[in-house]
Amino acid sequence: MIKIAFPAYPFRINRAKDKATIFDEIRRRWVVLTPEEWVRQNFLQYLIQVKKYPASLIAVEKEMKLGELVKRGDIVIYNPSAQPILMVECKAMDIALDSGTADQILRYNISIPVKYLVITNGSYCFAFERKEKEFLSLDDIPEWKKG
Image (cartoon, rainbow, N blue to C red; front, side, top):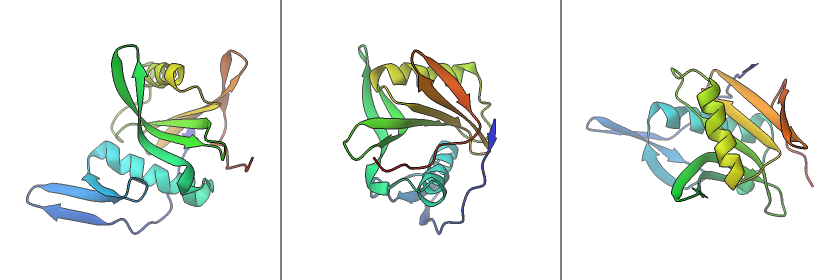
């Protein structure tokens, strides 16, 4: 399990009536600030500021087909050739990271195969690297490597 320390970031948050929204810098729009969205926005800044992934190569809520179902991957990062390389599944901080979460991202990986898979609840995460036909656990989230 990997412990994460999120970098400080001046999020733009609006509160209207009983609903809060946060500005998503990647999608360039306001979204409802749910507990999962809070984790997603912080993890995006972690990937950009700490791991140095270019924001221009990140997709949020990437639509994918799983048979007849349409699902959305929380975060998908591409290389400069537009090939997906890393996928992140975010959960709210009070959600345990268990085999169900791992199964979810493994199903998404069928639709969008990547080299790295990450699951996080904001406090902790698990990262895996695909080697041949298996995923090996990593001690840290890989940093951006150009090329």
